Image (tube, rainbow, N blue to C red; front, side, top):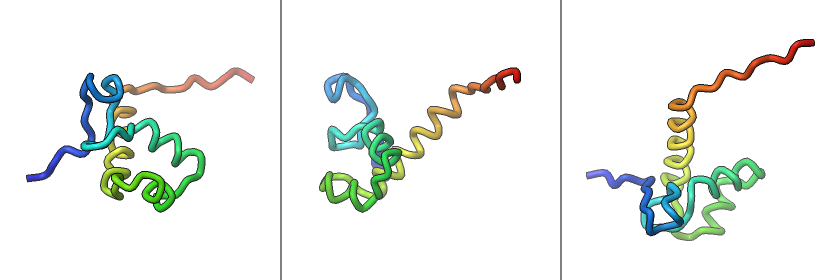
Length: 77
């Protein structure tokens, strides 16, 4: 049986999506990766985090964006 890696509980981090069993939010992982941190740096900074957890956060974000389709309008030149 596979444990769900991303969970949301109103009692943990005000319901933000987190890595199961931690208080590490999906938002934090995305923020650190976008700032240039590597998977290895994240894993060193957060010992309870796993590669699978990081990948789950990225997959969660991808699916969340897919559900909210936004097409940018090009500016007139």
